[in-house]
Amino acid sequence: MSRQLAANLICAVIGVVLLVLAVTGCTPGQGPAGTVTDRDKRALTVRTADGTETHFTVSKKTARSCPTGSAYPACADNPSWSRR
Image (cartoon, rainbow, N blue to C red; front, side, top):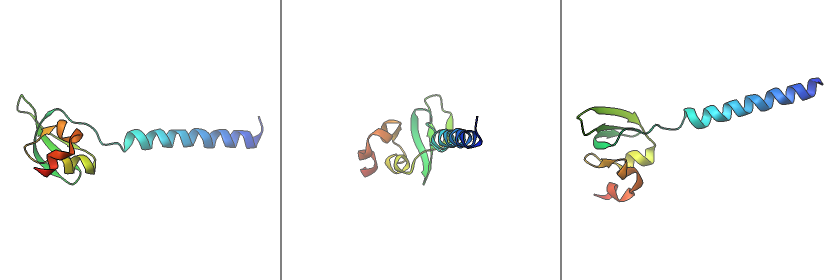
């Protein structure tokens, strides 16, 4: 195998790895279903039916769409929640 081909192959592999990391590592997680008890610019705190509170990172759009008292994840799919 020529050096140029090997270098191109290594660059392609590195590119794919970086792309996978960017897509999976930077995507905000989804938390459990429940009632939003607190929020900030990029995170929500949700109380589940059993009373457990979970704090997790979400997209800015989701944080804006889910005010305190709203039902998560329904509020994330329904931007009209933020107009209440």
